[in-house]
Length: 258
Image (cartoon, rainbow, N blue to C red; front, side, top):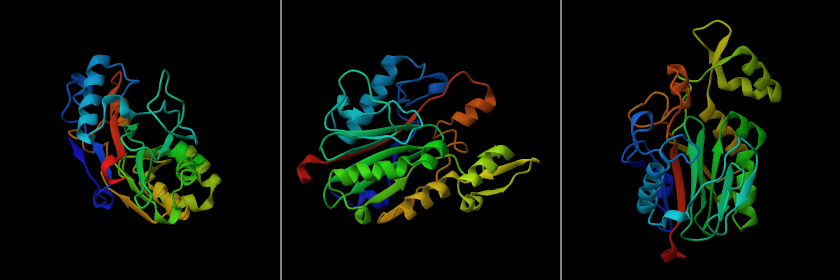
């Protein structure tokens, strides 16, 4: 039902999960653990799936919080579960035990953060657009506002589209390198003329390492390549399917250890 990262699992005051698509009640293209509030899946089934995820994290169903993700560089501090509409943002941070920060993805990079020494956690949705505009750094800054120390923060990248599955056009490559000439490191030739393969996980890793965090880890799981485990927006697009399920990656502080 979910994957854990050893880099986070060693801390007794933190619980986390990179949920797969297995273990839920959704059907068809959403089978089975679809956590996407914005998908066209049956809302009751999505709520049941999220309830199951919350139970695995040992938090109340309403305490599994998500933002309305818009590929931005905006991160918010969470003090309690939302009342009404979710804020538009792509990163979250909290120091409140019992709240699970949940990121939804289907190829973009889900990054879970923790400064376990002071009990501050974060989560970010990092596609190429958000990562290049600064969502990772914004999430770190939100954590620092709560008292985290950047050099003590551990960040783990969960299931993300891998470099062997992410083909992009020549214009994408040129524009990305124009942002920073060093970005050329993240491209290699594609079998198709005028195209290239893009390494999003490596790009996310470099951004975090340059930001000065204490430790970065990549689970190395490709959403596109493992259909039995993960949803993938790109795979759905290639098949012409009308919609896709969303994976949830979440982290919470355990009250009894704080």
